[in-house]
Length: 429
Image (cartoon, rainbow, N blue to C red):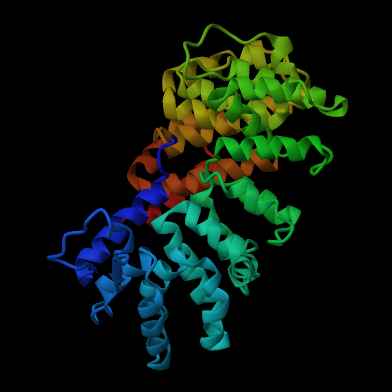
C-alpha cells in the first residue's frame, strides 16, 4: 500500500481539528445491547454536523477539511460588506483548497475591476498551503487560468505578475500536466516562460523532453530543455537512458552536447584536471559560460590557456565574463590568469574584453584603483577604454579625493592629470 500524500495527510489532520473545534459527534443509541438476532436491524450511526461558530479561525480549518458551506456564506457577507481583498482571501483560499472549481462562481459576485487581482492573490495563498493545490486550482478553474495569464498593464513588466507567481511552485508533479493541457490555455511562449524559472520535478523533466522530441521547440533547444536533461541525469539516470534511446535523429547532436556538458560539469564530484578540448568545443556559448561559473565555484577554474585554444566564435563570449566568476572565488587565481594573457594567441578585441572585465572587478570588488587603471591602460585605445577609464576616475575622485590627488601627482603633466585634480578638488569636503 502506498503511503498517503502530504495533501491527504493535511486534510485528515485538519478534519480532525475542525471536528474537535466544532463539537462534531456521533449520535448513537446508548444503553442498548444488540443481540445477535437484532444486530442487523440496528440503525446506522448518524453524523451530526452542527453549524460552525462565528470564528474565522474555526471556519478556515473547517473549509480546509472540506466543510465549506458556512465559509461560503461568510464570504458572501464579506463581499456585501465591502471587505478588502486580503480579508476575503483569508477565507477564500481554504475554500478553494477544498473546491477549486468554486472560484468561477464566486468571482462573479465581486466587482469586475477587482476580479483579476483578487484571483491572483487567492491563487498565491492557495499555493502557500500546497503547491499541488495551486496547479489544481489553475487546471479546474477557468478564471484562475485566465488570471495568471492576463497581461500586465504596465509596459515595463513584459511578463504578467501571475506568471511570475508560478516560479516558486515549479516543483509540483502537476506542472507539466497543467501547462501542456490545451484546455487550460497556456501558449508555447507562456509555457517556456514558466519552465525557465524555478526548480523542476522529475515528472516535469520527462514531459519537457517528450515535447522536445515531438518538435514543440524547433531550432536551437531552449535552456530549460538542457536543464531537464541534466536534472534527469542526476535524479533518475535510468529514465534518462531510456529516453535517450528515443532521441530523434535531428536532435541527436544537441542531446550529445547535453551529455558532454553534464559529464564535465559535475562540480559536486572531485574535479579532475582540465576538460578535453574536443569536449569543450561541443558546447555552445551558454553552456561554456555555465561551466566557467561552476568550475570557479568548485575552486578549479578553467584556464585561459585552454579557452584560448577554442575556435574564436566559442571563446569570445566566454572571455567577456570570465573574471565575473573568478574574482568572487579566488583573487589569486584571477591575478595568475591575468599574467598569462600576453602569452596567449588572442585577438586585440579578446584581450581588451578580458582586461576590461578584470579592471572592473579589481576596482569594484577589491578597491584597488591603481591596479585597475593599469589594466585598463593595456586595452586597445578607443571609446571603450576611454569610457572605462573616465568612469573609474570619477568614482575614485568621489570615493577618496585626497588619494586621487596623490595619484594625480604621479602622472605626467597633461589632460589626464588636470582632469583628475579638478574632479578630486571639487569632491574635497
